[in-house]
Amino acid sequence: MNWGIFEGLLSGVNKYSTAFGRIWLSLVFIFRVLVYLVTAERVWSDDHKDFDCNTRQPGCSNVCFDAFFPVSHVRLWALQLILVTCPSLLVVMHVAYRELQEKRHQEAYGEDGGRLYLNPGKKRGGLWWTYVCSLVFKASVDIAFLYVFHSFYPKYMLPPVVKCHADPCPNIVDCFISKPSEKNIFTLFMVATAAVCILLNLVELIYLVSKRCHECLAARRARAMCTGHHPHGATSPCKQDDLLSGDLIFLASDSHPPLLPDRPRDHVKKTIL
Image (cartoon, rainbow, N blue to C red):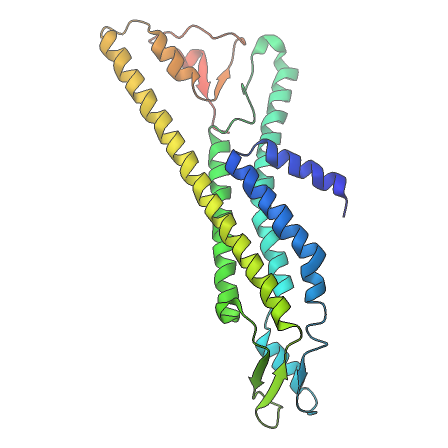
């Protein structure tokens, strides 16, 4: 693994995350990825080799192992971690796309042409939706995998002995799992960390939505107050502050342009990306 590239991706994701997102990122890459890479693979490396059944019937041990372990814990965790971390990288790619658009705009129109984004990393417009959708996707993936684990292994526990009566076994045979206690400890640890990550995603989602609703309500109150104080449509500084509170594109200059009451969109345009 190239840790330099890995560190760069982590710093990029951490830069555009909220406080809850940074805690989630630390939890995922310290208590899930590193634990998986350092210990979990070694614990489950001998699961098939040391799965013994009290019979010498050819093929019975393989059939019983496949019946009880339809999918390995290690492979399920690997797929889960890949799906959980990909949405965060999409946020970084969206910010990089914004920065590229801003760079092209500056090259085409120069400094006198204004700026497309005041802050490409600010969660407004399409970037806000990308971030929110990434939270929903990450929480959904963890919930889905917890359900899958519970379906394959009830209560997430592995018994020391399992009974198997699948063909070609001659009768009901006893099969013994290697190191069941150690595997149960790591399984419960991974389940607990996944549950905490789900909680952090939901808390961050509630925080972002409530903050956005609060900003919208504050903008409506400010607009209502300005309308009450300027009933004849006179230019109000409140209107200018309200429009500048979002992620805006300045087409003329970097300074705040004058907002005309009849045609304000000649100067300012909302971003959609």
